[in-house]
Length: 327
Image (cartoon, rainbow, N blue to C red; front, side):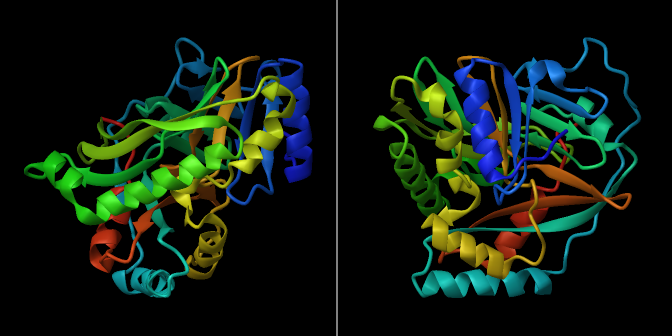
């Protein structure tokens, strides 16, 4: 597939959407590389997607059904804490209210990335040969009948923890983190839509993983798009990037803090992926992500840091998210 830069991506998105041609898009975190391809032109030997049921996967895929073997080798707490302290200093200085700090964890598994794609139980899945697999639970935006919805996901706890839901909903740090992201996404949607409202605030969903179920909180934010938005869909999408839930607030300054604190390149991790069917759009944030490099696998994960965050708790949350939804 052809990789497009930002300017080329916006033009291609606008051209295809204005002609109501169905396409799939994958945009990296820095918005410097994108894949944008008409659905009928995608080679399933190189690129597989299943975006909430919109898919190029055949009815009877063949894959390895062996029991999952899964080993992770997270960075040390000392290494994580160095990045955490960098973020915390900026938070205490008032440069950010919320910063999403991530890192990568080497993993070993007996399954190929393509098999992980087929066996993962996730709302949004993508596999690109010799690059990565992603199995994301987080919606980025949906566009339907002229309305745009976003569903930021912030707040995680093991579902097996006693009184897990109550602990999650009453956690002061999680409350503040979620409120900050909802406010950020409201502002983002207001750049492209009118009548922006929070239709549903901080609801809980259960996600199944190979290490047990977890609970996560999300909200539903909605706005009204102008007539003829498909003529300008590329500009609309890029105005909303990078996704607020995986950067923080304020977004521009926080992205600079992330570049200072993180010790690796995100690449396509925390970018966005989705499809346009000719009139409606559905998309996801590319979290829950395994990258392949030189025959080795790296899982990328992280979480939101506020001034109330504690390093060890955030370190454990980062490790907790190193999972595959195979169960």
